[in-house]
Picture 1 (cartoon, rainbow, N blue to C red):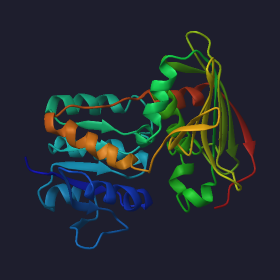
Picture 2: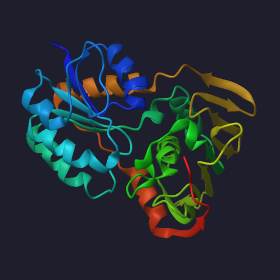
Picture 3: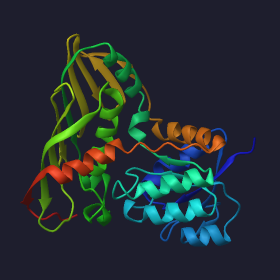
Length: 308
């Protein structure tokens, strides 16, 4: 079986830091090209746009779209129309409904469409899901707070419509939450803080629940300048589960039960290679729906302008 020849489209920080190394470490995958207006990778064929890549580039089987979400739908459609498998960085788009035509295109072309949630591949997420399966969960709290100037410097698109603001990292927490809980959850209330000069929130508080009334709360904040937190706490009848460091470590009542290195993107590419081998798709939009509902239900407040 020949390797899946992948082109990365959009070559920003995440593509450079995560995708390149993950492709190199994944059996059955090879990096064949890069398409980006602003960056290239030495030794790899480079093109300015996905259109130029598809018209003039080397033979490829798949594209990994690492561009801002506002432009991914059109790029995915172009790649699927050209017979390529498509991986979508998170979030998969700027809205929920825009993914439906892409799902239909992929099915009609017998090509893979893979909407990725890298945080679900953190090493302690699956152990946490298994541990919670046989426990009575009393409540859940998410604390997802980071400094936007450290993690998204100069990324103006994140403050534009469709950029999600603080939900860009917050959706990672929701992707984990919807993986580890045994029942689906939905948003009941939200408070969103918008900087006076931005179209996306810088902070958000959410209330969620499931059909049985489980209380779930979430705090997202892009203004954290001290210790950063990417934690989920679940109080159960058999102790408190703490999933910390973005899903890298799981502890129960302070005792560490699972921990491992960051290999989230390697997990994504292993999954992508397996899906492409049969042309199957994997498009779970649950985390994006929760964010959309937070915008629908959210009480909005205006806070001080954001200056990068």
